[in-house]
Image (cartoon, rainbow over all chains, first blue to last red; front, side, top):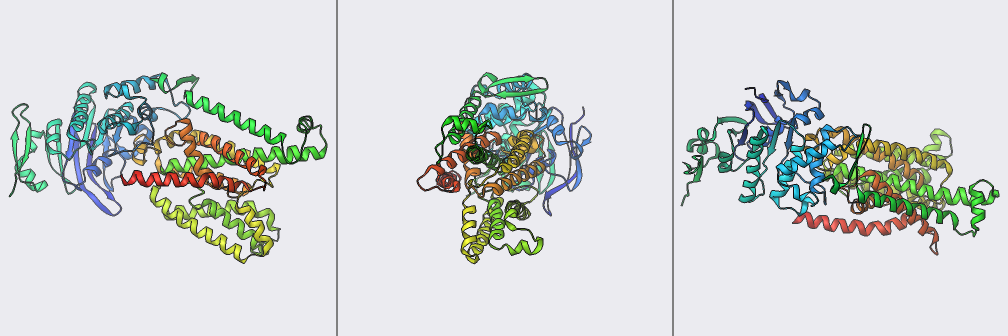
Length: 261
Length: 352
């Protein structure tokens, strides 16, 4: 099993401030990998670096063995899609127009439409359940619907690797679950390799095949959720005193904070 | 799905999605432009029958008729269309790149910089004549272009951080705008009465004195700007979704932003050189266009069409008022309330 995406000794940050201090890890093929960690630990920076949006100051990111920084942006966008945190669309933009943007890496400037593009856009919209919302402006949708529309755009890029930065931010639990169910379904139905940044530990444990715990720009633990999430880790990384139970339905780790006072 | 968004058309390697609403409005705007142009050529302060106008247009009229119909009326109407197109297109470029309707060349100091250079030349001609020995009147247009480019260089140097941050660009632009306007005021204060009057007239933006050569120059600018905007259109659409999303779609963001800004500035400077600073068109036209054409963000060509319509109608109206006004006064009357409307809404949206 070859792993499509790999970070090698990555040091990265903004200006002269390093946020990541040497990260090496493999993103497992065809799985949902979730990056968790306390606020400001470098989760999003790690995702941006994996996506080629941020250049590492040292080390490198490899996509199928080739350094991401050496791949032309347009070609990279055909193989790896990334959805930044809380993206915004112009006022009045419709769902169908947004999803169609995802075809851009495949279109030369003189051919901004083709029948093939149309069918891929339609497939992306039906996979994310926004096919009935095509004519609706994004600003009229619920947070969960809007997020699914953005994911549909990334799907329309037709890539093997999909990176999502905090896709559940600002969503209530029901909408967050709606988005994460979609992520798991995409992995199952399309075999895509998916990396997600999340801040909710319970959701991360429930929806991931592989967990990566980042603290202060370093990976402190990784593996299947049931191996990774335990009280000692939560205390050390998050400064959180909590019980961890195995839930009676799926036997997945469940974090219950200890109430003090 | 395409049936709802529009009809896809493939011709050889080319492919485009044709939207009903865009076709309808393009037709309406084009017909209106033609109608107003015909009206502009047929009517005016000098009462000429249609037969004499036609004779003048086909080159069979008297030299006086030719002067009135072709050199005055037709050239002025066509220049209004071209200047308006350039202003609307440039505004759409800068608004797309910054994702902010307030970030247009006329509000961010580019036009003011061009004005400052032109006014300095008009009121302090020794600045140039002492160096070149040529009469300064012929140098007003080139000076405006140089002033616009120089101002942009200053704004970009202060605001560029590996790309444009919308808010930063606006704050720097407003500051530069204020400085340029201060230079204009200073120059007007120091000027003698005659040159101050000339400068003031130029400053409000006027199409009264345009010549045939201006039309050829502007036609070139419009052709180049249209071609460049078409090639850039994909990247502009991506940039309207934000820098990160644009980059994730394979757009080289910094490069595309630099191209778009450079194109906008050169085009606006050329238009300003011909007509003076016609305010608010670059700001209003793209915002009107995106609402009329129903596009996701301001697209350069639709904005250009609306800009052409705004300047043409404003100039024809200005000519026919009891006291003839420069076109810039009329566009300001339309533009200022629109700016206030958008500002109020912008503040409301961002404070929720």
